[in-house]
Amino acid sequence: QLQLVESGGGLVQPGGSLRLSCAASGSTLDYYVIGWFRQAPGKEREAVSCIVRNGGTTDYLYSVRGRFFSSGAYAENTVYLQANNLKPEDTGVYYCAARMHFRCSGNADDYDDWGQGTQVTVSS
Image (cartoon, rainbow, N blue to C red; front, side, top):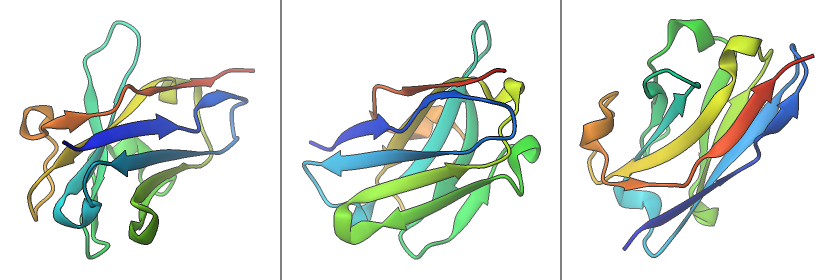
């Protein structure tokens, strides 16, 4: 059973950066696609980006392109989301999710395993 644990969230000023981690246990991430999602207060969960084992990434939010970057440290069974130039509208709970597949998806229903989430708050 794959288990995911996010970390790295926190309170940051506008323009700041955070590196979110998604650490996996119970299975190797080699067979999984990892998606990053976020949920702002009062809003639906939305897909942010996705990474596949060969390093290919897909961005689902136009608003984060050029600011957020997914990467994988597969020897450590960990995936990262580097979030730069953060804006107040980036505030929310960020989740990583795993899908045993070779292709990314922006649909949360396609993912089977989820972490507990990490809170990101962007405020001055």
